[in-house]
Structure formats: C-alpha cells, structure tokens
Amino acid sequence: MGLLHDCVRVVEGWHKDTEKEVRRARGDEALGAEMMQKWNDAVAAVPKTHTFIGTEVPKVALPLLDEPGAVMRYLRSEGLPGEFPFTYSAYPTQYLIEEDAIGEEPTRMFAGLGLPEDTNQRFKLLSENQRSHRLSTAFDGPTLYGMDADDEGVLGKVGEGGVSVSTVDDMERLFDGFDLQAKTTSVSMTINGPAPILLAQFIAAAVKRELKSQFNGSKPDAEAREKVKREVMAKLRGTVQADILKEVQAQNETLFPIQPSLRLLGDMVAYTADYMPRWYPISISGYHIAEAGADPVEQLAFTVGNGIFYVGEFHRRKMDLSKVVPRLSFFFQFDYDLESAVIGRVARRIWSIALKQHFGIDDPRALRLKFHAQTSGRSLTEQGLLNNITRTATQLFLSLANNTNSAHSNAYDEAITTPTAEAARIASQTQALLLEETGLFRHMMGLFSQSPGMGIVTDQVEKGVLEVWEEMDRLGGVMAAIDSRYTRARIQDSFYSRQSQIASGLRHIVGVNCYTNPDEQRPSVELSRTPRDQRDFQAGRVREFKNRNSEQANAALGKLRESALKHEDDTNVFSVLVDAVEHASLGQIVTTLQDCWGKFRPMV
Image 1 (cartoon, rainbow, N blue to C red):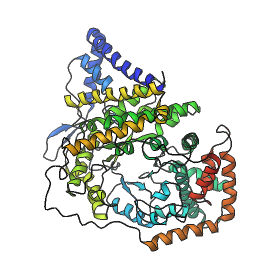
Image 2: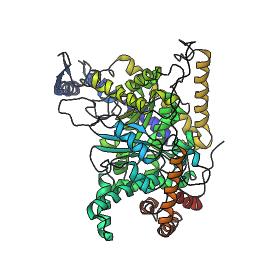
Image 3: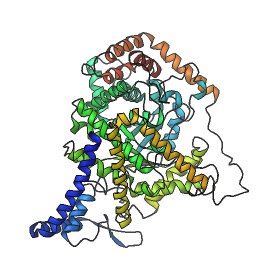
Image 4: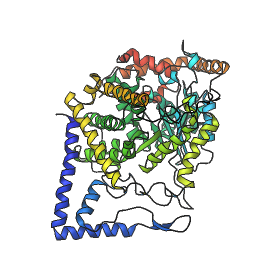
C-alpha cells in the first residue's frame, strides 16, 4: 500500500475518532463542560454588524449548538473559521467589508493578448477600480510550448489567445507601471512546462527595474547587485502555475520528460522557499483537469492527490516542509453541478487531515489549503450568448460560498474569442456586484455553509474522492495512474458522459437543447486577432535581443548546460536560470535543456 492509501486511512481514521470523541464528550462531564465553554466563548467573541437596512447580525455565522457532543463533532469536522480542519474557511474572516477596509478583494482577472504592451493595457483596465493589483497572465501558444516569437513556423500564433513573452525585455514591458514590490501587487502566471523560465524572467525584470532606479544607469558591482536582487525577491508576491503532473494528465504542455521536469520544479520550489517568502511556486491545478472533462469529484481527487504527491517528492528531496508546504496553492474550476458547491470545503479538510496525520505537519500555515477559483470555460455557449453572464455569476457565487482566496470570472464572449474589453469589464464587475453591491458576503461570513444539505454533500464528495484515491493506489499511486492512462481514461469517460447527457436532453443547457430561440442570429462579436505587422514587430524585437546578447547568452547557456547535466543533489538549476534569462531567450533556454534532458513525448 502506498501514499494515497495511507492518506485515505488517516482521513477515515480521523472521522472514526471523531465519533469516539463525540461519545466521550457526552459521557465525560468535565470534557463536556470544557467543550460547551469553548463553544460559548467562540460564539460570544464574534463581533456584530448591521446590514444595509439596520438588521444586526454576527460577522461570522455559527450554528446553535447546546450539547457537547455536537460541539465536538462540529469542531473536528467543520472547525471554526480559519482553524483545523479548515472545512469552513482557510482564514478567520474573508470578504467582510468595513468602511475603512484596506484589504484585498478576491478578484484576480485572467488576461493575455497580443504584445506585452497590449496585455499591460488590459491589466490596467481590469485593475483601475481595485484597492489592490492582482494580475493574472495568460500566455500565447508559442510561449506555453517554450518557443520564441521568431522561431520558424510560429508567427501565425504569436499573441493569439495570450501574450507573447520570449525575453526578459518582454517581461519588463508586460508589467510596466505596476509596482511589483508593493504589498498590494500580486502576479499570477498561468504556464507550466516553461514555468521556471518565466518566473526567472519575472525576477530578472523586477531586479533590472530596481537597479535602474537605484544606480541611475551606472553598473553596480557584484556584491551590490546581489544585495538588490535578494531584497527585490523577498518582496515579490504571486504564483506561477508550474503544475507538471496536471499537464501529463490533461494538457500535454510539457517540454521535458517527467523526471527532469520534476527536478526543475523541485529546484524552483527550493529556491523560492529560501529567497521568496511571499511567492507560491506551484498552483496545483484542477481547472484544466475539469475543462478536459473530469467531474467535480475527479477534479478534487486528482488535484489534491497531485498535491500530496508533490509533498512526498519534496520530502524525498529532504526539503524543509515547514517552509515549502505553506507556499503551495491550488486552483479549482467551479461549474454548477451540485458537487461544485463543496469543492473548497472538501479540499481543505482532506488536505489538512492528510498532512497532519500522515506527514506529522502541525504548522497551521502548511495545513491551510489556499485556492484560486475560476468559473467554467467549457460551460460557455455561443447560442444564447448573453446567458453566459448568468452562468458565470452562478459559478462565481459557488466559489465565493466556498470561501475561495481569489477568483477569476469568465467573460461571456469567451465562447467565441479572447475577451473584448467590454466583456472583460462586465466579468470583473460581476465580482464587485456579488461582493459589494449585494449583502450576501459583505456583512456575514458563512451564510451558506451551515445548511444540512451542505454537510451531506461535503461528506459524500469526500467519500468519492477517497474511493478514487484507493483505485489509484492499487495501481501504484499518482505516477502509475498516469503511466497506465487511468487518469486520462476517467477524464475522457466523464467528458463523454456529460456530452451524452447534453445530447439526450438529460442535462439541460439553456439556449442549446432547451429554451432555444429559432430566430436567433449568430452573435456579432469582433474576433480578437494580433495584426500581422505587430507579430512581425514582436519577432523582430526578439531577434534584436538575441543579436545584442549573443556573446553573453553563449556563456550563460554553457553554465546552464553544465548545471543541468549534474546530479540534482549537486546543483540547483533554477538558480542558474535566474542569471541566464538576462541574456538568453525562452526558446534558447528550452533548446539547451532539451539537449541535456530530451523532449517530453505525449501519451497517445
């Protein structure tokens, strides 16, 4: 039996022990009195507030419990907000808005189109009314596959469906005008195979900006430069997706064979743990697994299972889990299946119990699962296009009811094109409408988490996740499930099942297989395309970068090759990358590493 089986055992064991503790609380007078005192103190400590019309309500919703067994079960199964097992929430308060509030909104809108300057303008549009700048970056196809804008055969895809980033100069342009070291700035990059290279470019761009500011164009010595670099990295805040397991399970945007990919990922995680305390080096992603076809139970099982595998891998490499695990984050898709109503609740509970009981981790920062949510892209339809606004709002509501830590709401026209500016604005304001205009989240936390149905679905979905883990463990674990195509087969089966339900009419899709409009015309939506002259301009800039840096690039790539060919215990490849990106392009670095490690061969 392997790691996943052990995690199933400790989760199930926790619930069995909970029932024993419930009986003990009811039979032991002293323990019962202690439980009731703890509960009454917790309820009394919740401050009160008033709704728009003056109704007094507690800022945190807690159930009315009047016997110690119920208190014991609640504290062990649900937990107070921000307390183990974190079923309720990762933090004590979320979304509550006061007149003098300066905290972050959960809004993190995904954007990427054209050249870096184009995406920079979209970032400014989406964040113009925000208290904080939470920027989420979508990259174009060539960048996702580690290719430069001037590479042969890619020009037609440059800037399509995302932003083109080939060099550190592009990264500087992308975030021009944003204070990357500010506490109110957070940057997310949705990229996987070449993720360490893009993060290295981001670090180098931020350092270059700071060096220009401090030294006014003069060249600092090596010691001063290193000092600035360490200071800047300590302030950078955000995440890079970098989830290589999800890629081989659902997407195939993988550049190197799986073992070298895991090595490079581990090097990046170790580096950021040492020098970037505010950075999340992996966003363990269920979103793309769900978009590929997985149902909510499978999304949870595969994603949290991947997270547990990563923790095991970092433990194998003798990393300090107390430093590494708190910097892991997750990313889930919210559709409107019933099971989506509990995705965050189940993920937080099984993650915290597994880490505490199996790995012996006690630090709440590590046990506290944080996640980003995105509404379902696959649910958007071209027919009845404006219905997508309601779909997105419904899914966003479910993610907020799960106390997501950040959220992206899709634009209604994404069924057809990269979002237009107006559609992106509506998507962003959908979040403001739910969080600020309505009173559903701003006055009281937990309004929707205390129903009997929520508890029933939470337990049933958790049961389904543990059953999938047992199946994977019987195959040999996460990697064996990938190699045997178990993961992909389940995803494909679920996709087929969903499409069959739609085709038969069992699953209603408004405007598609019910409530259709026979007079509906094809929507008139301007397609977002990058003009040919801009694509040529971007390719020319990349060629100029390579010509300007050719001598330094050769030296940097030589050091990178030397590091990559050493054993993982003898060097950290990512530390060499951070220097290499100053002179070498994305494509040059990928080619160098593929020469050392080989190329990933997709499963067919």
